[in-house]
Image 1: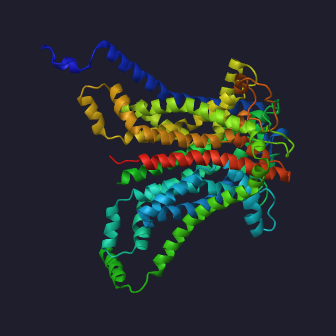
Image 2: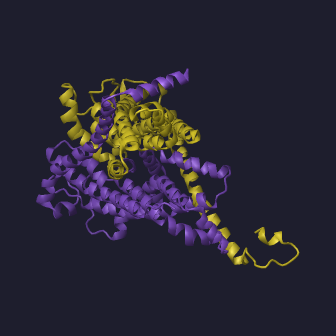
Image 3: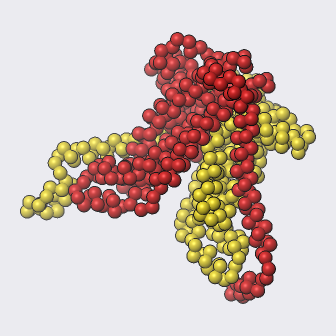
Length: 313
Length: 308
C-alpha cells in the first residue's frame, strides 16, 4: 500500500498494489485467516469457563468438609481429594519409572549410536507405538501386564491394580519421552562431539560427559511433559485400576485405586443417571479443574526447559 | 585445573588397550531399551491378534456388521465402524480447514506482535490439555448446543466430531505450521518479484509446496482422533445396545452413537470371558484403522520429504 505513495509526484511505472478489488480481496483473506487463528483463543476461553464455572458450582453446593473423607465415593457424597491425587501421583510415578529409562535409552541409541539406515527403520516403529490408542493399552494392561507380569512378581496383587495401570501408562508415554529427548540430543552441535573425540574420548565418554550434560534441560523437559501426559491419561487407568465404583484412600500400588482421570471416566459413564442434588455430577467438573490446573502447571514448567535448550545454541 | 584433568583423560584414552568393554556394555544397554520398547509393541499386537483372531475367523462379516448386544454370540461392531467412519469424515471436515487457515495466518500473515505470541503460546498449551478435559468441554458446551439445535439428547456423532476436532486442532496447526516453515523463503520472494500478492503467493506457491507435509500431519492427527476414547465417554457415547433399525442417514447423525474405541472400552469392562475375545477382535479392527492411517502418514512423509 505504501508503494504508490513512495514515488509521490510522478506516476509510478507500474501500479504494484493492484486495483481496489485486489486489495479488498487481500484484506478479506487476511481477516478470514486471523478469524480462524482466534478460534483457538475462543476454545481456551470455553475450557476455562466450563471447568471454573461448574467447579465453583460444585464447591458452593456441597459441604466443604466432604472434600476430606475416607475415600472417593461421589454417589455417597464423599469427595476425598487426597484419594484421587495420591492415585494419580502413584500411577504417574510408576509410569515414569517405566518410561524414562526405556525412552531415554532408545533416544540416546537413535541419536548417538544408530547409523542413518538403522535410524530410518527404527524411528518409524517407535512412532507406531505412539499411534496405539490408549484404550488398547488399557485392555493390554488388564489382560496381559497384570496376570503375566505384575501378579507373577507380586503374589498378592489384585485383579485390578494401580501397578498394572501405571506400567500401561508408562508404555504409552515411552514414545513421547524418546521423541523429546532425541530432539534435545540431536540439537547438541556436532562440533562438541568432535572436540571430545579430538581429545581422545570414547563414544561412551562423549555421550555421558559432553552430549548428555548439553542436552539435559531438554531431557528434563521430556520428563516433565511425560509426567503431565501420564497424569492426564484416562483410559488405561479407567480399565485396569478398578476404581469404577469409587475407592478408599490407599497407598498400596498392588490394590485397586482411583485417579483423577479414572474418577472422571467413572462419573461420566453413568452421567445421565447421576444428575441430582448431591453434587456427584458437578464433581466431574471439579476433577476437571484439578486435572487442568495440574497438567497446565507441568506443561508450563516443561516448556521453560524446552526453551532453555533452544537458547543454548 | 581443567587442563590437567583434560590431559589425564586424553592420556588415559590414548593409552587404553584392548576392547572397550564398558563402552560396549553401555551400547548394548541402550540397544536393549530400544528393542524392549519395540518388543512391547510386538507382544501387544501378537497377544491381541491371537485372542481376537478366532472371533474374526468364525464370525467374519457377521461380527463386523452386527449391532451391539449384551449376548456375546450376537454382539458385533457394525455400529462402531459406522460411527468411527462418520467421526473421521466430520472431524477432518471441521479440523482441517480451521487448522490449516490458522497455520497460514501464523506463518504467512501474522507480524510478530503480542496477539500473535498469545495465539502461539495458547496453541502449545492447548496441545497439552488432557483429552478428558476436552470431553468436559463437549459435555458442557457442545452437547447442550446440539440438543438445542437438533433436539434429542445432543449426544451424537456430530457433537463427538466437533469435540474431537477441537482436540486435534492444535496438532493440525503445529504440524501444518512446520510444513509451511519448511518452504524456503526464496520461493516466496520469487513470487513477490513477479508481482504476486500475498494470497497469490500463499495459494500458488507456498501451499502446494507444503501440501504433502500438511497432509501427513492431518492424517496423523486424524488417526489420533479415531483412537481417542475419554472424550467420547464423557460426552456420553453408547457402549450398550441401541436401535438403529430403519433410520435415515440424518437420523443416524443426530441419534445415539458409538465408535470402535468406545466399544473396546465398554466390552473390556465386562467380566464375562467371551467378551475378552470380542474386545480383542474389536481392537484388531481399531488397530487396523489407526495403524493404517499412521503408516500412510509416515510413508507419505518419507516419500515427499525433501530438503530445499
